[in-house]
Image (cartoon, rainbow, N blue to C red):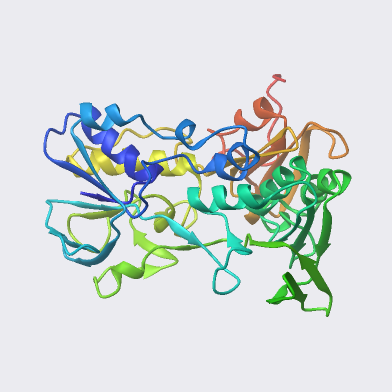
Length: 389
């Protein structure tokens, strides 16, 4: 049984069937929608360039043909060993449980039609209906979801203010220099970027959302979007006996403290031997790679080691440019620009720590970023020249 109709959950189901598992396979999801891809929510779906039926992870026949039973719109509310209780009162006791319940968006208070988050399909459709030419949108949080929403909203003609508590958006992830290069297109597109001051509270009065900042400024808007990161969906696991910190703690193969229970995706904090700590990777590729490992484990097989398979990876599309990041640039103590210039459209940066390559990132420089995937954590830093380009 897989609890969570997410990218990770669907990937586990598919991999189990691919490896020859012939038993009953149930996929439970709290949303009523068929499993869908989340990255387009803040991009093409928000702008109207695509529709919900185009972002499904699989067509309905896929699940039928593979004997995967979908139970949608029914949250899991309790786990006791391998006994899973659902919100509608049903209780299932499978041979194994995979937790793939993902994460939820941090909010700025009790949700209302003009104070929203952007985590699910319904969130994106609601925001799309309310965005129009001249709509004043205030985004609290300058992470990648907030930045993508800002770019999409500007494409729709909205008046956008982006508020970031740190001195620069993205700086904690990619360093100050690359962060400055990524903020520049937002300002050039007309986004008002306010940095170095967090949001204290949001009040609604006179038909307007009033966002009070810590420095005393008040920003007025028609809509406020909270882009403040996420919280793993572990509330239903209270009292289960699982080790829960920032997510469900697992070993390096996804196994939890409970026999027969594994966890994958945004809800899971896997142990990373190279870092010596548990890490919760909130990225599409990490979710699918973890799914392959867990499926093999559940069937008593040893997953084949793939160099670079455990390297975190994410991408973001903003103003027609693709931003990519590999590894853990946020832990770097040294950086080198290896392609282009941070003042140009296309560039790539390598990140090192204690003499080892730990990350790579760039804008419109896929070849220069992705070529380092297998070398991350193993190669010396700076890289020694090999004669290649």
